[in-house]
Image (cartoon, rainbow, N blue to C red; front, side):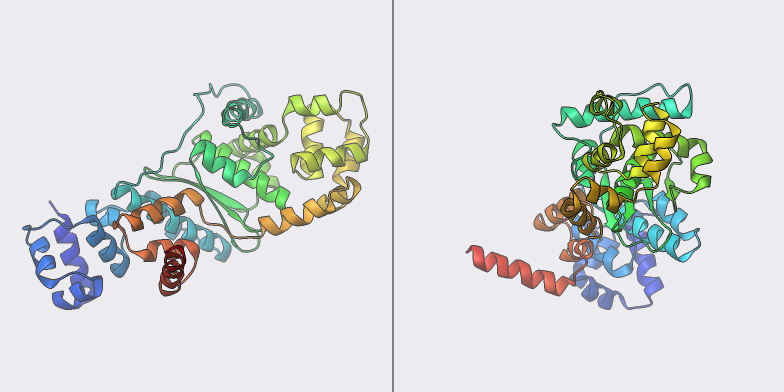
Amino acid sequence: METTADRVRKLIGELGMPQSAFAERVGLEPTKLSKSLNGVRRFSSLDLAMIGEFGHVTVDWLLTGEEVASATAARASVGSSTAQALALAQDYSTMRSDLASLGYEQHWRLPEPVALSGTWIGQGRALAAAASEMIERAGLSATDNLPEVVEAVFGIDVAVQELGDGFDGLAVATSTARLILVDATPISARQRFTIAHELGHLLASDDQHLHEDPDIFSASSRRGESEVRANAFASALLMPEALMKERLAEGNVVVPTLCALAGELRVSPSALAIRLEGLALIDQEMGERLRGVTAKEAARIAGRSAGFAQASAASMTPRPPASLLSDAFSAFENGDVTLRLYARLLGVETSVLRQQLEHIEDACC
């Protein structure tokens, strides 16, 4: 049976370099490496992290000989935007796998089991009710910063990165990771709907291990059964039926009122129109009128132009998963990984980050 030492020895052979040179490159004393390869000494977690970084392999592979499932799915995909998104997803999943193998596991939390029976739309709404209850119990709202809400309530990593034209987002579920990756876009409402849509896929356990959504608003995405459920979930989560009925109780169903409601819920006028029509709260004619209003126009009509601009700037800003970032820094502080992993998440050079941390430490002292 192949051991960790066997895999390290194989890696050294594939790199085609002397064992002493390999030891120097990964920051290990040659005698320690030799003892570990011969079974006299165990590889420490930091040893494995440094070997993985230098050899471009995962700690999980060094320990078990296996890679995370999403990595295989990523390599099998084609298309520039799709390939870029899947490469990022693979990178985040690999980081999670490596951290888990070092004792820094991701702890995701799911709603109480929901009986997924009946129509796909009904299933999505039932799942959204369970998710909404969890959010409310945490003292939060779906109108808050949605990436932060998803991470805080469900323990799911949320990353915002530039994925290229025509790719909204994806969801990843492996034995060690739950991840939502969405495009950095100026259309805040679209990004929020995408995050909610991908959350629906994860909570419904759709397409393990990887679910791609190049364009969640395309006609094909509206036809697939799991897509119908995910869209119904997102609509119900972001646009609660009870709240909308309360806002429209006095029958003041005019475009300015609906634009204000879209701004309050931080959704697009078209998404709101579809939801209200589905609940029979507006007729088809009003739905068409509302769909003809852009998100920017709706913000102006509702007197929310400044908020719209701020939301657009925020949704264009890339962000790594906050909980993954926290776990990576904890592992670094505890000496379990090098600074390189934390720097990769921040998108900065390791040397630059080290200087910044040293500057902060000097300032504090």
